[in-house]
Length: 125
Image 1: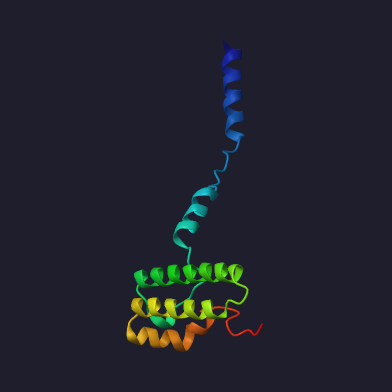
Image 2: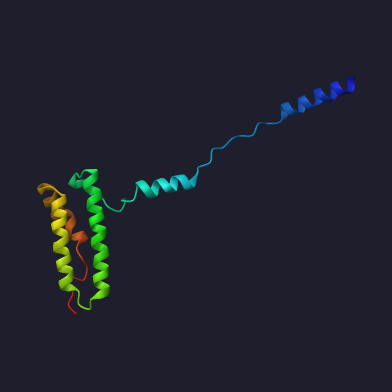
């Protein structure tokens, strides 16, 4: 009996010396990555000067991506794509003008439009 009590006290004293394991919170990278993909898709575009509403900004970015895709298709399809690219520019300028207000469109033409023009439009072949 005395041995069992001594052994129990010895075991309790050893467990008192053992340190509790530190819990370190780890990030769930899958969840944060999914958040980044769904909510920060439009990081490459910065239209601060235009004071757009979130809806206008989304529509504008979708239009710019469509324009870029159509531009790539034209460049692959045609040997001399200048005329098609000019038509594409006019078409999307009208669509952008419909999304933005008059003052926003004026700021767009002064500050941003040259960044999003079609490439190879004026190139001589």
